[in-house]
Image 1 (cartoon, rainbow, N blue to C red):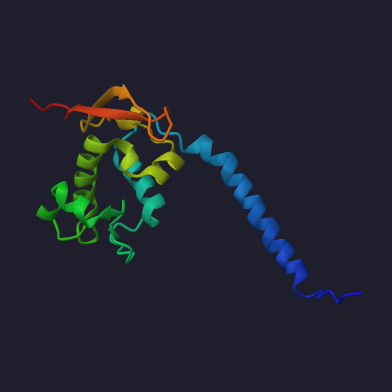
Image 2 (image 1 turned 90 degrees about the vertical axis):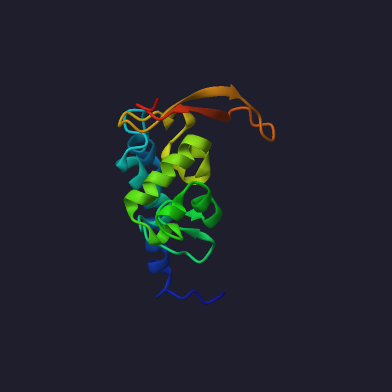
Length: 163
């Protein structure tokens, strides 16, 4: 009969049980609390939620993996969408400046620019219509990528109030 260490087993079970309970609670609560409607899309709250997912809410993070700032801009994306006017990298810019650039990315690429977190938070192309005077977007056409016909392309129309 093999010797079973008794001192570590109960603790492992408690930790494992706590992890399972926490995961189950999040799995139940996340769909209830994280659905973003068009009423609050592209607001400061939405950007904070995305930053919490992407970077733990740290708008000045340099992860060392080539992505910077709260919503984890690649250096090329940051420069391509005008971020260089604010700082050389996103993590060196203010939260407000990062959101300005993120709005430009959103207009161009939709929430798919942040695929994992936008999916986790329930942000979809249909949510790319802001009510705070930032953006209006509509579906341009359906498309299929690797056989996934549920994905859609968003065609940005114009910034609200723009000529």
